View (cartoon, rainbow, N blue to C red):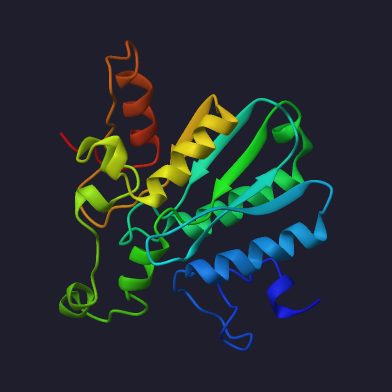
Length: 214
């Protein structure tokens, strides 16, 4: 088995086998997803669903064949790279557990903003100053998930059109966007009132010892 086919290839593709704690870049996520498809060709598929403004491909990894779908989105914000390894672990778990895909197909957008990920150059920042020197996050109108709130439909960026195209195609009963934060606490943002949401949210945060941001 080659290095790129190893289960940990999201973390060690370019280190000659040495351990690494950095986050994977989009191209590494694609290579590892490709290896997963090769190992499970009847269960998994990888396809391009669009191109970024700079011409970088957006890839969707699918696991399972059920009509009911879940969509998981990583890399919506360039400075929140934790979604990449989370997608890798979740995809591997779905592959390993038939019960998770018995009635649901899982679809993973490996990186919603590959251009932003390229510009956010945090590999090993070393200091807070170095982190901000290498920090990048596009303005709201250029962010895949936020742009519909800023610009009219005829001016949406291609990353947003790729995401909405997948939503129209799959009609998932659940979409999860993987974000991350370095400070503050956990919080929830909704588009309408959901009775009963506060109690399980607060319970989950307490069990994981994550403060709730007010």
